[in-house]
Length: 79
Image (cartoon, rainbow, N blue to C red; front, side, top):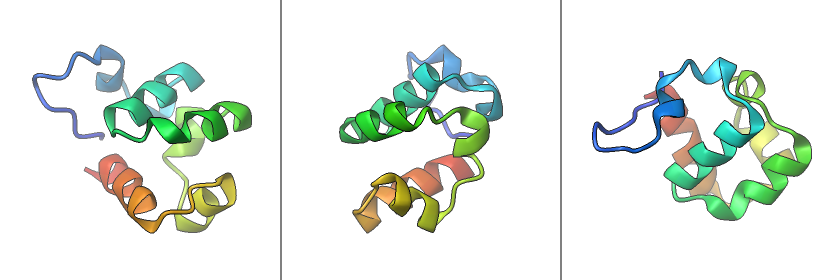
């Protein structure tokens, strides 16, 4: 499950991440303060089902070149 603070205004993130649409994945990137990754995820059509299975190398292949960004995403998905 994705950790979403109670004060978050992102109700879609309360759904099972595996069921997220591309738009919900993009909203998750915004929530994680990683909006600069939106274009790559949108272009690749990343759905939640794929996102939750991604590891470090797949994120790198997608263009997430900064290790801090990869760790932040992986941690948020794991929590």
